[in-house]
Length: 113
Image (tube, rainbow, N blue to C red; front, side, top):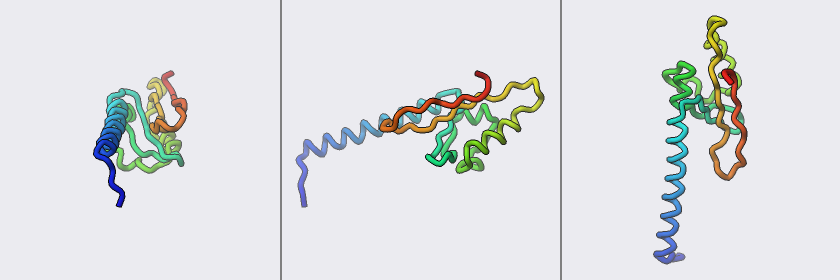
């Protein structure tokens, strides 16, 4: 069994705590944003949507749409929200990756821009 020096264990613990704080900060930032932000998996399925998005899209419970393909969800939501021609379409922002090791991808904005 390999023993680690107490300093290495403390450094590792600090690094883990710093990473956890960084991730918590990202989550708080997303939730505080009034824009519609969706987090997708690599196949384009909806993993989560922030409170601003739920408000903009008039969704009380995201559970039924979690796991759906974003393009299908956006088409259905846009058609539902269009209503009378005088109502502008909702602004939609898609967040593809929050992983800091991935290169940033531009947000896709639909309507209102």
